[in-house]
Amino acid sequence: MWRGWRLVAHGPTQSVPSPRRNNDTGRDLNILDLLVFVGAMWGCLVFPVIASFYWSRVTNAAFTVSVLVAFAVFLPVRFSWLPDSGALDLAIDVIGVIGAGIVLGLMAFGFFGARVGIGAGAVFAVGVAPFAIGVISQYPALAGSLTAYAVSTIVCVAISLRSSKEPFDFALIARRTGDFADDDAADDRDDDLEPSHA
Image (cartoon, rainbow, N blue to C red; front, top):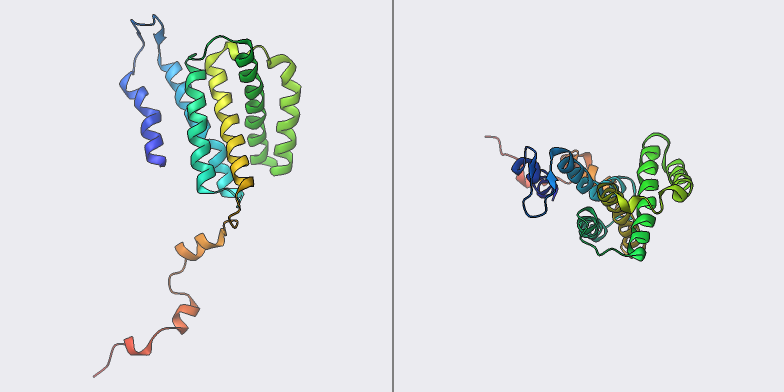
C-alpha cells in the first residue's frame, strides 16, 4: 500500500516538472502547487500511520477507510470543485481548525507524549478558531491539507473505537520477526529428525 501511495503522490511532480499554463482553466500549474498537493496527500496517511504504531486498537479497516475518505474529501476541497456555499465554507473552516489542532498535537506528541499532545492540540484549535473560521476556506491549498489531517484522524479514531476486535498484540511482531529458534522450539525438536551418524 505504501508503494502505491508513493506512486500516486509523486506521479504529478514527475509528469509536470516545470511551470506551465493550463489552457482550459487559465491557471498556472507550478512545482510549488504540486509539492503542496503531495504534502497534503501524505497528510491523509500521517495520523493512521502514527496511531497504528502506538495505539493497539487501530484496525486494518480503520487505517484503510480513513485514508481513502480523507483523500476523497481532500480532492474537491483542494481543487475547489465544491459549489460556493456559506454552509460548506463554514464546514471546511471548522474541519480545518480541527486539522490545525491535530497537526500541532502530533508535533507535541512526538516530544512530550500523548496527554500533552492531545491537550496542546485542543488548546491550539480553540485558540485559533476565532481567527481561522472564515479564512481557511479562502485558501484551497491550506484548506485541503488541513481537512486531510482532520478527516483521516476523525475517521480512524471513530472506526477504531467502534471495533469489537481484540487489541493488536505488538509483541506478536517481535515473536514473528525475531528469534526463529528460541529455547522452547529447541526443546520441542523431534529427535527422529536428527541426522544419523555412521
